[in-house]
Length: 205
Image (cartoon, rainbow, N blue to C red; front, side):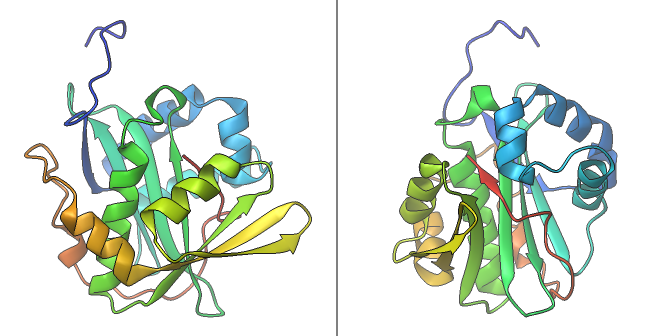
């Protein structure tokens, strides 16, 4: 794949569940992301903490489900990732990250749509996202993909958004179906949630 080739918009990625074989590609994806995007996703966490979270993304478990957006031109290069995880207080938190050069191309929207469909299949009514105060773009994005989202300020420069699942899943169903989106049915796999959240639950899209 020629890295200089123009990035297509529709059909550019395949959305599917993350798997252990993605570990090396996920590390390369993370290394390509800008320091700002990494900071927004992991809220300043570095080193072993981030590497443990990357390992959790590829390992998967009943309490921690993740998806990847894979470049359709080679079927291997990861351009985005999204995670759903339930905390001990019962809240199901979302976190995702899209490679800087692939933002504003529908990748984040398709990742969120897959999470919303899975959440609906699990019978969840709402999801939670925590976003840094300076990341207005992520807050606008979440209000767009989850109509009716409610925002509250947590303090310490952080906002929490309550994201209703039903309207988000409805939007995902109405989105054009891409023949290359081989992961579109993954939300039918019913695996309950119980346990740890993504690191800081941050969003960068």
